[in-house]
Length: 107
Ligand code: 2BA
Picture 1 (cartoon, helix red, strand yellow):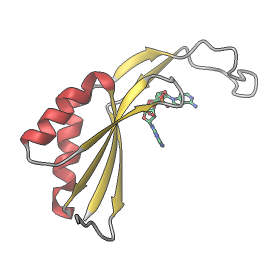
Picture 2 (cartoon, helix red, strand yellow; picture 1 turned 90 degrees about the vertical axis):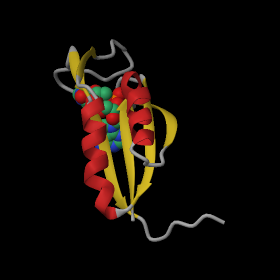
Picture 3 (cartoon, protein in one colour; picture 1 turned 60 degrees about the vertical axis):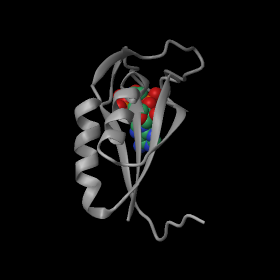
Picture 4 (spheres, protein in one colour; picture 1 turned 120 degrees about the vertical axis):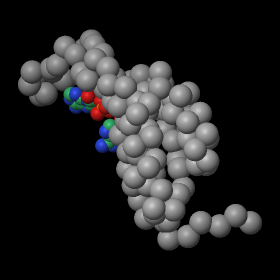
């Protein structure tokens, strides 16, 4: 069994969620915030059988769009230490971590 942690743009979260449900994959959606842009995003926890992992990644990829967003204009960022600071960043589709699950139990 695997646990997928998928970070998805808020604009895509609804359609990703409904298509996971439609395909019969259980998911928990958590409200999260990106550490760089400080924008809201959605983190999905999806516990699945090993053989379903690739299908879920494909599904999330279909419904998660790439988009360009302005980088934060925030003086608290140390722009000297960071060198050249991007004016825009490309966000998404989705960032997905796949982890082994030792045990999953409902009691
Ligand atoms: P954020 O941290 O808000 O990052 C938004 C986008 O900003 C990133 O898009 C990336 O294009 C850019 N970015 C992030 N850190 C940067 C930096 N130090 N310098 C320049 N550009 C930077 P994505 O890579 O598509 O990531 C979207 C969201 O996924 C991230 O939001 C974060 O919440 C999550 N994420 C991405 N990689 C992660 C990782 N390795 N571990 C945990 N969360 C991650």
